[in-house]
Image (cartoon, rainbow, N blue to C red; front, side, top):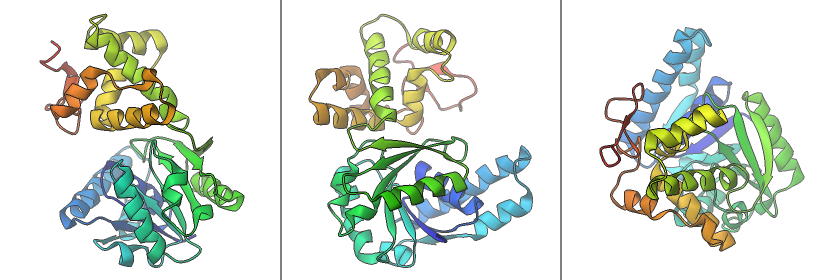
Length: 295
């Protein structure tokens, strides 16, 4: 495996491209918007600079990594010579199905098609292709260059050979693979999202404030980040989308998004990406300030 295509140049996509390029793979980074690709390259360069400053890599490693990334605005051109394509587009089933149909038609016959989805069915995405045995989930964690975990999800038809290839590849790029089967939320979000939702309910019902809820979980449960801060970091729209998948998949009311979460998403209070969620992010992340809505 030599060439990897990454579809989507947002936070997850540019992080995935960064990691593969840093570990010696040629990367085709694909997005329909040229400006998005330019921002992604700037972000990758900035994150590589951080690694240089911390002594984790040298300047030459940074230069070589950036040289391995080629950008494309056309999916067909971007995937035509790839051994692996990792889709990292917005968490919408209709969009991902469209992308998988397109890359299936354009990618080489032996190319493995992976998705970075955090909750959408691998089996359903595979049904859009003529190679369901070569479709698999690679759920990277944010920030990708820092977080070690890759949740590998087998679809109903994913072959054992493809699973082994992706497991070995994950180790080669410095990640720790954890295997999961294709059920709503997989492992990570089936456990994480109900906890975040319950934290939001705890705020919604007036049991505790934003800082108090996060403080209890950080100091009492040894979590590095409180659930409300983490929700802001993930994106409240993403949290709601994953909870919707869990609710639709299991039909259990315990997975229904808290009304406060729904209202915040409708008000475009999405966390870090919009500048405000449970916290105000307009001044960065060093000094957390609770949003005026909750102070």
